[in-house]
Length: 201
Image (cartoon, rainbow, N blue to C red; front, side):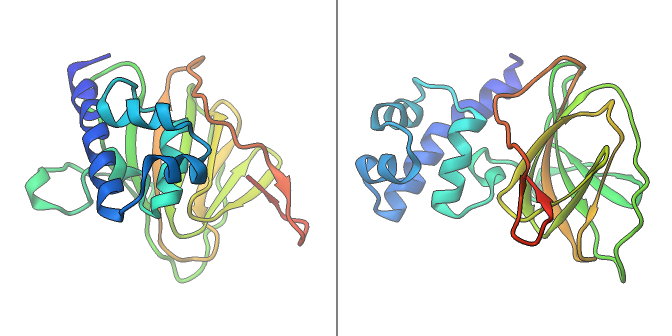
């Protein structure tokens, strides 16, 4: 693991402890809410346990904060961070990692449109994990057409035709991790059928 990633992960524990104490929540109460054991939460806050997506997702939901707040990801447009956003296909990608190789992290912003765009699926080598921060994301994945609201995640092999866009024309923000072919993450969200017959993750 590169030094930059080490620094980010080392800062997660103190940030989680400060957030919990600020909310006046005990470790026991947090364990009951998240389903993560009290000992694991204690080790996570003290830095004895590395943060993983499986641990951070329930914490983000419990605290009702974006996942990138827990890991200290910079906010778009903050002039103190000297970010260099990348514009592609009408969307903005804010790099959250800079070293070549391994998994790359981005904050992706899909701007609001007068009307939703027509999907134009693409394929490329790699594997992708995403988490919706705000807005409603439309994910076209092969033959499936999924709508993901804030707080939902998906992962997929990018050799499968895929397309990301707004489900309703509104702006969408999401966190994306992209890895090389064969790189898999530990969080999986199986699609299910909603009461309206719409497939979702």
